[in-house]
Amino acid sequence: SLQFIITMKLALAAPLTAQAAASAPSGQPSTVLFPRGGTFLTGPFNVTSDLLTLRIDGTVRAASGYNSDFGAARIRDGRWPRIPPLPSYGTSEDGGHVLQHQAFVYGRDISDLRITGSGTIDGGGPWWWDAHESRNASSALPAGRPNLVRLYNCTRVELDSVTMIDS
Image (cartoon, rainbow, N blue to C red):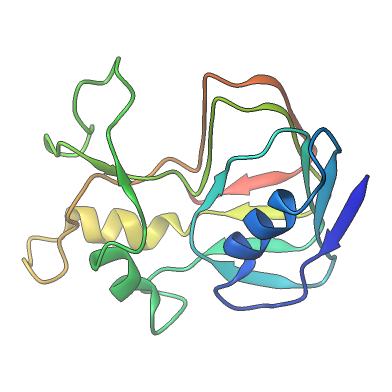
């Protein structure tokens, strides 16, 4: 099993997680560790690898307009991916948007995913709610708000002990 320890604290945690998982030999499990005491500010995670453990002992926080200078710009310019809602939804639950922002932790068609640890996944919910409720065109969201975690058509998934807040 390969283990990768994330030490970057700003904006790179999600791409580094994807890079670390992709570098594991085929069929070998890998672990990405967010160490205790750290706060890791990042965009959304698009989990694409099987046999992955996200060990979150620190805080993994979604970048938003309230906690970074670049958060709101990244969301509005499309660097936070926009995807179709689940087929059962039809449209986003936010005012009929055709698309919604990808969940902060997103996985599709994967297996053997573990999200565990003593830390916190913080989705930055207050910023998303305020932007959704804004009547100001410059602060309105171009797509529906994201879920905190969305795992679609996945098998053998374990969520254990990690705290999830502000979806």
